Amino acid sequence: MKMGKEQILSGKRVLVVEDEMLAALELTDILESRDCSVIGPAASLKDALPMAETSDFDVAILDITLRDGEVFPLAEWLRENGKPFIFATAYGSSAGLPESFSDSVLVPKPYPEKRLVNALCGAVA
Image (cartoon, rainbow, N blue to C red; front, side, top):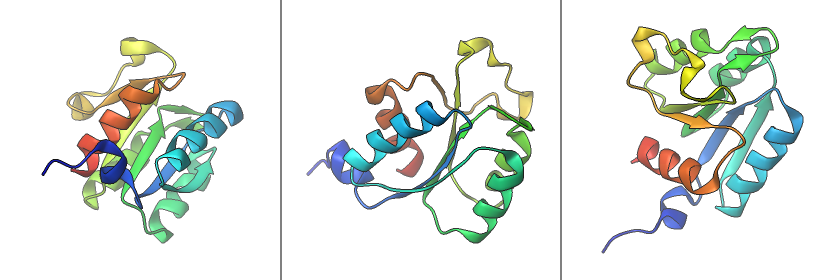
């Protein structure tokens, strides 16, 4: 029996790293409507790194460009610690992912719900 996307995400804990308040609220609404628990949102790399180190979560959504720089140091930490993540950006495919993340999933902002849900399901599967 194939599980639906609602069931795959149900109960998952999602670390949200997003510095735009309205985007973070929209993202929280999407996740909570899928029965996910939201950790954060963290609006800066300075806040996100300790949150990632001390929180129990299943997957992270990382806005590439934060107030205090790009999120790649956190993405490296997540990769090293076996935590799945997806990137988000308002800059489209020209976001300029470093070569080491060229195979990563990139979701555009504003968050298209179906694409976001599909990306999260793929990350936690």
